[in-house]
Image 1 (cartoon, helix red, strand yellow):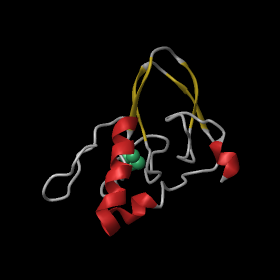
Image 2 (cartoon, protein in one colour):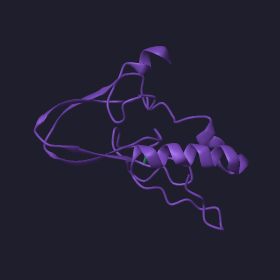
Image 3 (cartoon, protein in one colour):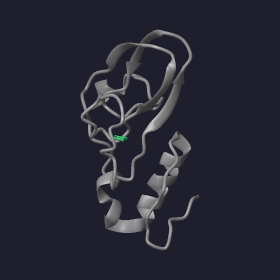
Image 4 (cartoon, protein in one colour):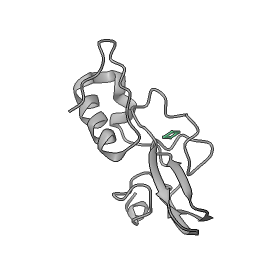
Length: 114
Ligand code: FES
């Protein structure tokens, strides 16, 4: 488990494992991360389907971005971090819009249970 700095600030890396570490850290850190502990904001209860070109994308995991499904930096102080993904060929992607997927960054149908 990653340990926060003396000031309590956590510098997450942009991957799912780091996100899990943050959740564990938040559980022990108390009210500072209360918003995170209540889960991500649901941006929408359906996938965001787009045709995308090959490249690197940063999927918003906190649900607060105004540029869904991508990170715009709004996650600051939420305990969440964007999830980096590489798209290797042009294709249609169903990005998770509810932020509760078990397969970040992609829709797994979890929105139907919210
Ligand atoms: S992860 Fe949501 S704005 Fe960055």
